[in-house]
Length: 164
Image 1 (cartoon, rainbow, N blue to C red):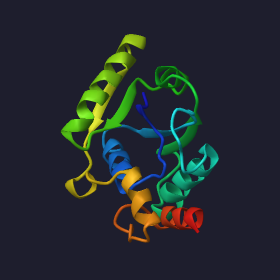
Image 2: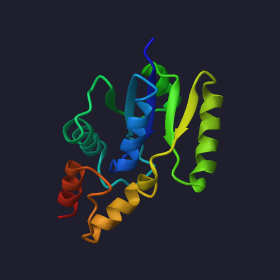
Image 3: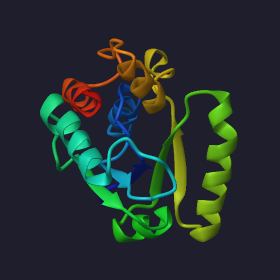
């Protein structure tokens, strides 16, 4: 049986921290489903269609990942409902620092209460990617800083175009 993991997030924009988790997850599952949130609970720099395109360009074009190993979708539902729809019993979440743990622990507990057949796994990106956040990437590019160590070429172009 194929093992799918659902990796939900805003990906506004995708960074090497996100990509590191995708690569690590592919070592233990067959398919990573990158699920880009359509939620209106946050102020996004990019709308959902732009974020989908940025993720697709970063993963398929820049990094040459295969669509059969990494699927990219958008969603506007409970993560547990999406797991059922996508035939995944695993949710992937990333941890950068101890400060992430409390929120992620609560989120995993709520998802478990909603569907006790779903497990959440936590992965950490490599040390050089643990400091990267989408928020910092946006702030650095806004101030004309260099973000080539934080995200892919096509993502950098999308950010520069947005702030031009």
